[in-house]
Length: 123
Image (cartoon, rainbow, N blue to C red):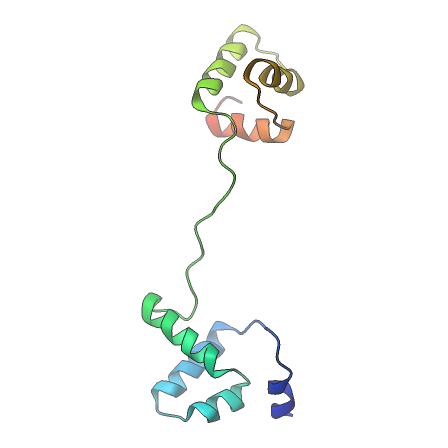
């Protein structure tokens, strides 16, 4: 059963505690073949986890920095929007998206505009 599970191949999610167990057994001097067959993992994975552990003192890498799209509306345009709000406090998002398209050549959805305005503290 263990052998058939091991030879199925493919990627699977391995829990951090199983990774730690494998590294601990390796550290205690158990044979790598025994560890890989018993836990149904590959030697390659063990070496990778060891490198990650050596670098981060954890078997899992820290989460990557959040990467997203850059802000669509630059500060100068936000200042212009602020002026529009001062002059016409009841401006709707559709009117503002139209105004941005005409006067600043910015195509933006209402939801993205709303998020940008909230982030800038304008709503």
